[in-house]
Length: 240
Image (tube, rainbow, N blue to C red; front, side):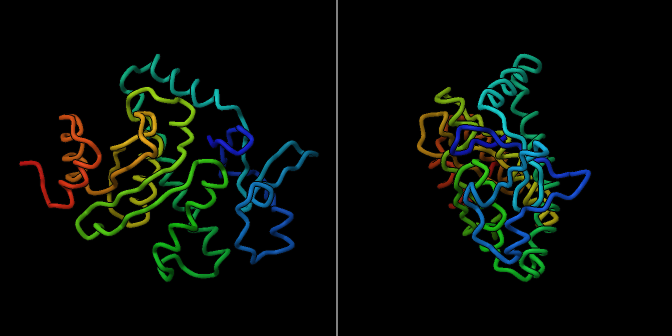
């Protein structure tokens, strides 16, 4: 579900019954700067399909899809809708980690373990930016202490829902948790501690071990801001 510059939503579908190779990729197989809207997507009007550079099929819908999905879940499961969206994102992230490794090693002809970690992560997120999920910023300076911060600018979900006074980007949190868990082969969790839908200028996520996430959740429920939570974590505070 991705908001693009044309106000459409793009849903990448990883599994295809047949291979649809991007015509530009056939011509320039080693091209890396392919993340503009015109380069990344391949529209095949004769078959009614849209594929991207990584040969995944995409489906375009309107922003009403996000609203309908979230409101429908809230009607069905109430406050548990956030947990459902997180679970959807988590499973997506786990599967996308495998898909990413496949296309990355094919395009760059190197194992992801041989690549600088920040370069590798930027390579993973750039397709999401092209699809409309927003720009990101990763702070891995505290990784050795069991947590990482991820900022999302122009979240597709938060921008669509507007200022509703609470975090709404649960699918992003699940996506990060699933992807990084698969990447490092360790269970990680994620929580949104700041959201555009709360009147902030961007969304901020805490990714890390469960004890770090539990502490952040407790402090957040007690009224702590994202800045308070970040300060406490950097100072080494934990739950008693």
